[in-house]
Amino acid sequence: MPRRLLAGLAVVCLTSATVPALTATATAESARWTVPQKAFPLGEAGQVKQKHKSVAAGIDMFTLRHGKKSDGYTVSLLMKGKDSGSRANAEAVAQSARDAGFPVVVSEFVRPGVADHPEGTGYMARIGSWSLSKRDEAAKMVKSLKDAGIASKVDFLGDDGTPTTGPWDVRVLTVDPKAFRGSYHASIGKTVAARETTSSMAKRAGAIAAVNGGFFNIHTAKNLRGEPVGVSVVDGKLLSEAVAGRSALILKGRTARITEVRTDISVVSADGEKTAVTGVNRAALPDELLLYTEEYGVKTPKDDGAEAVLDARGAVLELRPSGGKVAPGTRVLHGTGIMADWIWSHAWEQWTVKINTKVVDLRTGKAIPLTKDTSVIGGGVGLVRNGREHVTAKADGHANVNMILRRHPRTLAGVTRNGTLILATVDGRRPGTTVGASMIEAAQLMLWLGARQAINLDGGGSSTMIVKNKPANHPSDGTERGVGDALLITP
Image (tube, rainbow, N blue to C red; front, side, top):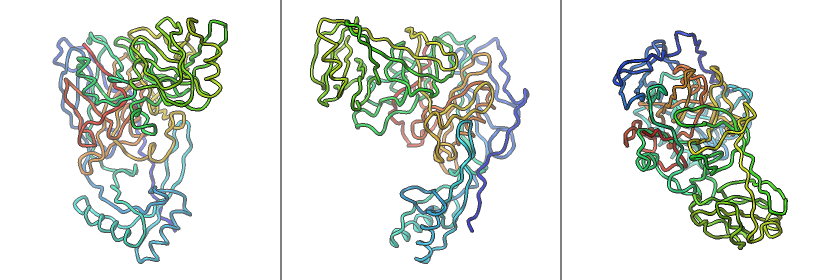
């Protein structure tokens, strides 16, 4: 019979005393936001250890540490490259290892349900348990299994998402809109297609502080992997379309809010023909009409399609085969398949085509004005809605064990009742030093910090907080990773 591991997390009761107070102060040196005095919501009960630093007028940074190391290592047998799966698959790989003389235990675990995805059950086949100082012994077991033709890996037990004592290492940056006189912006770096470090984007913009933004597409061509997965608006210009219904962070001046969005993009020819534009600044699929802007940074796809080069007013400057540059001051409509035929038929040279772009707030049903002081960053799972845990893993494309239950480094953004912006990085993948957080733990943390709305941004090795041109946290890759976009706090 399999052993059962409980993956449920302790319920944290939030009262008015738990939510941090936001108090006005007479000097920039005093924190406007204070760390909650009640117990840290993760791990064993107890107050968090904290350090405070005043970064600038209205901006404060807190270093929070809590918990102690207790988890060690195990060895997980792999099922088609994964460390968990169905009971039948777990039992099958376990039996293969037992036949080779290895003592394997099959364990059942429960992936907690979230707002839009029900609870699930999974199974792991594992061998042994080693302390933090004995990882080499676990690695020897992996080698022995490999020699027997059995695929496996060393797993740190703190990554599982089951109850742990930690420890946690968290950076929290708060921006009080009443005292801060600057503004928030998104940045895609030098181009949409290329990845760039958060610190590089921050330095070029003269930002006081910054965090990495949303997820980027690692499953496209290597030279396009800076492309945001989902919506991206930089200073009022749409640079990547939304995945309808997914979470986003809306920035305007020094205000921030969180909602779900969709994009509606269409083109109307001079002859009155109207059709949908299905994507912006990404690889093209069959029978699509895409829009490329000068921020794209590489040539358009060479795919036997057709292109109309437009000036800023929408006048067609040139019709050409696919695969060309997007010159400064121009845009390119790119059609494949039947949409290439649309271009040849309805985008003649010297005609004018009108491109209509909307980013729609799905909570209000209204379009978000794309003014020059507006930016939008796509998130990768909503965490808190209206002061309650509301993890939208399915809607945001992360309804799986690895994203919901497993602990990873996290970058989180939240907004309090009075409009204070809270940015947090939870370092992880550093056994014995910091374990990271699951999606549910991330939601609990943001509630504890006082967020009424909160969102998960890209995490893992991307999680980076920059303060005055220096990393404030410890990126898990050991060095700063190039990312698709970033959130900048500028003077």
